[in-house]
Length: 407
Image (cartoon, rainbow, N blue to C red):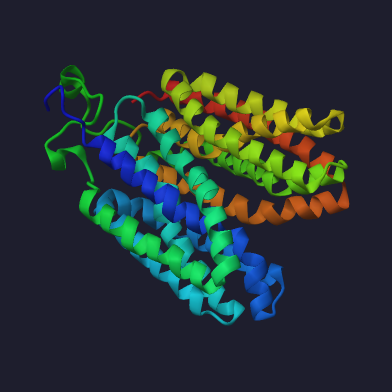
């Protein structure tokens, strides 16, 4: 490759950003804006409608082990393109639904596609196409989902308000079908070798000395204690991130206005977006520092929220810093898996670790609310601090164990 040419790896990053920004942004980040209008239209409770997201998480969990093996053995280009096509059809079909069970069926199908699109797409493709700045590009791709949520939530709200929720689903589905899916089919490639390239950042010396299969085999990894350490790490991290669902209610309970609570929610999302990119950069330099920053800033953010009665500036700062812990879910976890196990069977190993995300998200989204009703919001925030402290210990242990099992 000539020095003045742009490496095709950047096209792969663009494809991953489209997946995360549009597919995931529309379906996951914008799901909440449909709850009230759809439930009112169908004459069902919001909670009954919202169960379709539980089916989403459940089927993602069931699909992930198989998805990880398929994406290693089959064409990732084909799998991600088909997943995008099926997702677009599922979202479009939701415009025709008239009963809750139909949403449950669609949620199940969406969950299967999310195993490929949300959990495996960008970590797998970035690891294949890059040897340097892996953390940065994982952070950029992950941040795209938040940017998509910021852009498409107002669009969806406007469509629902002016044209109805059925039209909004059609527009969202069409964006997935006619923008993302064709671009994935045309531009996505499985490996650099398909374009006659080495991974971005691969030097001639690295190419000559690299092992053909660098890393720990999947069969060996699942028998190692550090694998289960990272599984618990992922479970605790996703549990902490779901606290975000209850922060607006907590802020209003502190006697702040609904508008001020929305500012705090925005501060969290800004922290998430900035944190994903910066944590990626930090991890490229030092994974230990990445774990430390993720956990430390998250704990500080939760402590500021706990003492939020001190003023709006305190809770705004707390929300922003908490966002960094939220960002660690999709940046710190894949970087730890790569650092500990290498690239040999990365997709299969990470797919199994990602099951904790789906399970934890489904369970804790409801469990935190029940626990807050029994105790208080301050109590669940304190538990969040404890969970993050445990994450710090588990993450550092995993890195140390990985050094003892260098491949």
